[in-house]
Length: 208
Figure (spheres, rainbow, N blue to C red):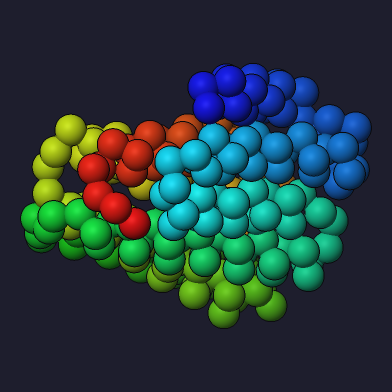
């Protein structure tokens, strides 16, 4: 299990430094990108935490789809990640609850702000993008509503990093047309988010 995670980290680093490997939209670029989170999913299989395996596997599918050069693939990628967030929400809801009104309210305001900013830039993808914002903010709210425990900080960091990564990606795609300097942080924040969520849920001590 540890070897799969080390391999995942190394592949993620290689992808970040060298991407796009073989050129943007190439199959090798897609496979390298997909492998990083796919290995995390495989490493969880022995634990029998199938919701977590499913969330990570859907993330890997989303990585592959988003790396392909067409709007149809992009839609598939958003769908895969939306389903992954639904599974993460289910996992969060299995943990003890502690409502935090202020940070949850601020997150809702942030989500509304992102929707407002991206509304025009998303163009024909406006509806699916708005739906995706709803789902990922829902995941963040689920994370904020969990009780404190040994895994809480890691899980919260994972959820926050996921939101940061997706915000950077959306800014790059819909506001800067691929020219946003901050886009270099999309991949590391995303991979760290997946790793943190995996690590935190494994230690949550709850059966799926």
